[in-house]
Amino acid sequence: MSDPVSSIRNLGPASDAGYRRAGITSAQHLREMGPDAAYARLLSAGTKPHFIGYYALVMGLQGRPWNDCQGAEKAALRIRFDKIKAKTTKKDRSEIEAALDFLGVVPKA
Image (tube, one colour):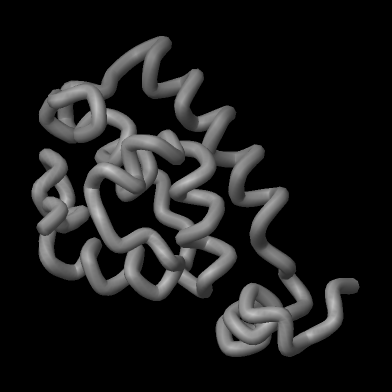
């Protein structure tokens, strides 16, 4: 049996459900994808973007506490987060429409 997503530092049981909706069902799968691709998939599945959630994931994959992210490193992660958010969220669609889009039910605009 593989370890759940919540076995990664900084991620809890709610993370298991969110990542499961995005098709990421294990810590190993998330590690293989990397933080940016995994977070993009999470957003595409309808999770609202949240910068702290993103950098907590990045820090957790490095085995670091979420609040270890500071200064220039945090600024660089903000740039990455903003790029992921811009690519994966559509301002003119609701969360349900984004989820249906992810599943291939709604044609891509």
